[in-house]
Picture 1 (cartoon, rainbow, N blue to C red):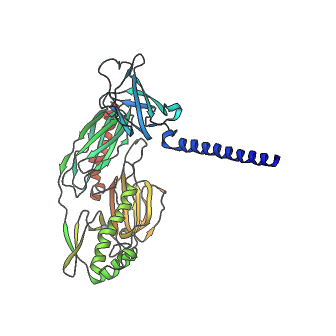
Picture 2 (cartoon, rainbow, N blue to C red):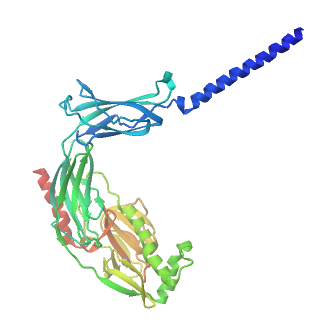
Picture 3 (tube, rainbow, N blue to C red):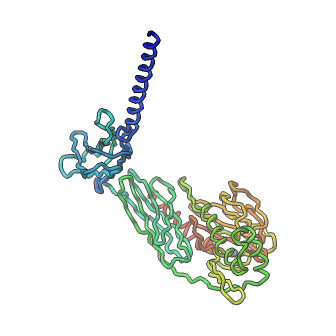
Length: 458
Ligand SMILES: [Zn+2]
């Protein structure tokens, strides 16, 4: 009898435990379901904003399960006004709140506003009220456009060449300052001499028919000022030539360079190999150059005194910059390329002089350029030396004027010992002739720098 009672009690206890476990499991399951999720909405809003009160401020709001309600309040420190939002008929997972400055009710005289956004989701959590997120931001009212004044610039710019411009740009909340061009390239200016002044070297790529450039200053509130840089534009014709590719060349240099990229070139015919090296591989090598020569320093430039570049003593020009070369093989044009630099030759393994101070930014093998040295001279200006037999310096070395940086050779896509010399401005190849000509440099660089300083000091 006692034993049976005990047995019954035991069964009851087990049943009860099972029911409790079931309930807990059910509750857990319920709370884990989207119906009772506990994640509040996400309001993407910075703590501090700048606003010109024109275009509405846009604030993205999202929630895993859906937004139920939204409240947007703008306050000027004395009064608060709710900014009506588009109602959502059914819950939405993401929403873009639009904050307009109300026509009536708020004052802008303090220059400061406070924005409060409260968003609630459709979850049944919190006794069926849902999860609520609240975010606030302090807004600085800024409806003043940046001031931009071009000061002085090179008188002219030649197709394929360079020009220097110095200008003033001021704004309390200046965010971005660039030189926009008609060909998509943005040049970055360098702070110059005194606060609020900037200098920029711009380049007109030789493949672009036209050239125009504008200073574009944007502040944190999105106010924008554009001002055109004026240069007298000089057109220049570049040579077109046809180069006959000999069997020797195709089976020698081209075949050797193709071994740099065996997977890409193993199944190509000699003509295809020639085009691969001359076009695809050249683009890749130029990409490496563009990458290292696109940088500009942000330190204030006090001076920019350069000597004409003179990399090779008694160097004879054997090929000029900008030649548009077509390559003929077995009677057919199989490839084309622009020669971006000049070729200078003297004796074998001649010393390459870096005639201006600078920092070595690249000293390595680079495909068709062979052993390749690149030196940065400030203000976005770089000098490049290709086909070297020997590199005397390393990346990071700081060079004085007239140091020997390398020795000439025939590495890369070169026939015979010579130097390939290029000048680049923020990643764009320009005419080396200008930077080897003391008269051009005096008129377009030194005089502009000195003229600007006089104007600033006045
Ligand atoms: Zn060359």
